[in-house]
Image 1: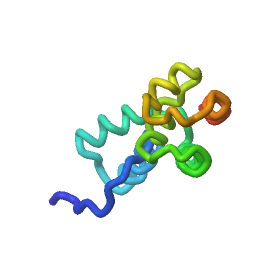
Image 2 (image 1 turned 180 degrees about the vertical axis):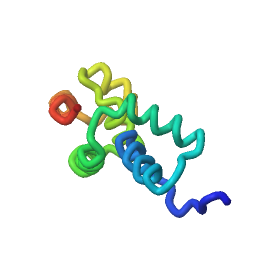
Image 3 (image 1 turned 45 degrees about the vertical axis):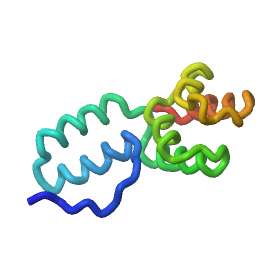
Length: 111
């Protein structure tokens, strides 16, 4: 029987990994869930709690919307060029100094 969707929001790969690990302890994962968990395991660059706090910080301090903050957490850019490619033209209000702060913060929080 399909599960009911109770919430729709973007979550980071580390959070996906954590959710699927908990679900796996309760029982078998579907094929899609197994593939998703493997992808999250391979590409997660932060711990789940760190990613959650990082996303909140991006929103609170830099006014970056949740979907973009999640992408920054997932990709964990290590250069200004990478960060700019994620932000695109939507965040032209961020100063060079703020973008450097974000990249430095990502570097500290990466696994």
